[in-house]
Length: 227
Image (cartoon, rainbow, N blue to C red; front, top):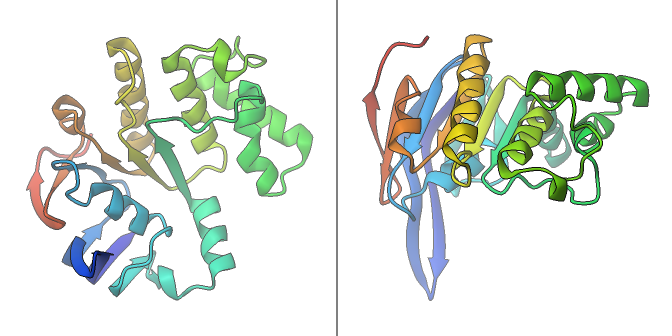
């Protein structure tokens, strides 16, 4: 799935270089559930952005399914990201003036799916996350947990093989948090790959592999076998 070789990302502040992320060798395989943990500023979101094709490293190579991600033309990299990678954010990033159904339709629209097929797929996904009776509700009319579930349905719209999640449970109450993590468990059972940045120790224990970042460098601990 992913392979990072001698990758370094450096930020420059006041004429000084700060190493945001560094990995001599890192592989993430199809079907793995990886939790990325570490203190704030340790490089977790930088790693997620590099994997997602949104932040080119200063040195090294990022392979995605055997192909160098950052050697692809921008249009092709965008297409690959849209079709193969789903993103889940702590802040949901729902469009406030669109309904739940319309929010889930957005990635399908961008992929050129016919309108009737968009609606059918979006309705199915919202039903799967328990929001079949909230299709016409806008984000302001939904609870925080419901908004995250809409965001999850939108993430799944194009059937991505990998999901990159940045603090997906950070704003959720305990019941909503458990619902989201249970969905992640199901995604992995379906064969998807999940890379989840989290400060939540209990959420990290749901993964079968843990990467700990400290000052931008990767340490690793195995947790348990995949479900």
